[in-house]
Image (spheres, rainbow, N blue to C red):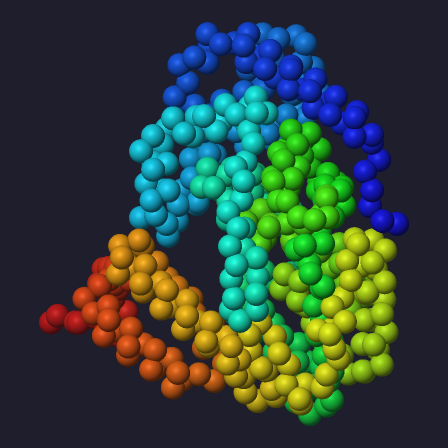
Length: 430
């Protein structure tokens, strides 16, 4: 059965208004106690408010506990540190940090009073080579996104399957490709037997995520109405033709919600269809099996589930069954039985982005750490393919341009080596 909101929208708004009124009343009644709030304030606001306000029940306090954690100054400060990472020289970050404490306290107050409203998204077109519409949030809104994810991500992380690899700690493209090869070796019995791959893609995924279904899925784990209200506020800030649908590409919350939404598909595949060799990266997923007919049946069942349960469908042109001998295109690689190649458009995309990052560095818009982290990440990814000569060429040109620079990561690495040299290289003194 498709998920649907089981409560009247007017009733939900009335409940939100009552809850907001209770919280505002509590804050005003305790104004003297909180007027000297400073950057170290990490109080459990709801419990403190309730001590002098009998109108707030114990049940309400428990319900608001999660939201009170979200609104603490400590959490907002952590969110700011995450949001500014690799962007310390950006003008909007510098501007925000001129009055850092006041800005964080203002966000905190807006969240507590439920008056927080995100600013309109900045829209721009990216062609790499596929045309994509990217939506950029204001920096203060990114702080709120991180504050939200700091609190709710650990709750959902426990529910995600092992083989979901996008936007998760300890996962990523490198681990995903390794897992694909592990599956391939098992099914082909070390490349001695036939193996087929259902390589599937969900049609216009981010544009078609249904807000009501997403909220219903989230509310299975999060009962705090204030947290749900904030999530709805963030979702509604993205304006597209279909009302109540879509998430902006580029937002932290969109990346997280993408995993939450498709966790329903993961559970269907793993627990209902009981498929062993399945892995997913955002809206791309693969299933490996020795039978082509079996995969065709899985494809039909999965598409039916997507349509009925979460209002999505497989992309008809990008969801195909192929033999591993033909090579599988996955996460920018062409994976064959004994070797892997980077797709040409993937190399072109890297070169364009690296050129742009170098220009930003030359114009003092970013620091050297950003350049180093980007190249290190890409080289780690490129190592998964047969790219020795390409990587050697890129590293040589990089060393010429950035000769004499050292990143914080490199400095820490070399300092550890000096302080704790390997036993084999240690000099023995007689």
